[in-house]
Amino acid sequence: MSERKPYRTALSDEQRALVEPVIAAWKAAHRSVSGHQNRYGVREIVNTLLYQGRTGCQWDLLPHDLPPCGAVR
Image (cartoon, rainbow, N blue to C red; front, side, top):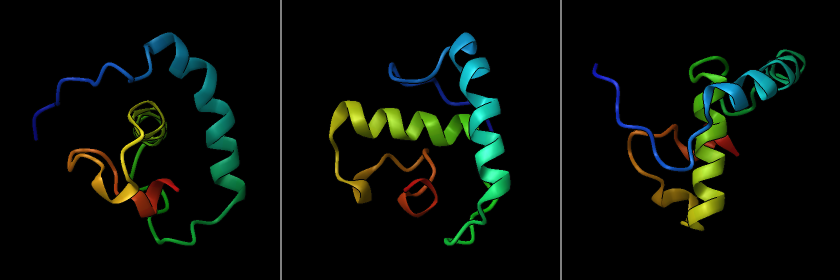
């Protein structure tokens, strides 16, 4: 699988370094209710949230190369 071109809303490496430990600790303490536990990386989850927040698209209309809405919400 080839890497996709990042969206303009994607985290920079510096931003990722700041948020990843916090989100990883939260994920470790909270079990996934959707069954997607650890299937998607923290960076991809945050990038999807940023994309949805910036574009305002409907959850079920997220681009196919981002994690599904059930894994993100």
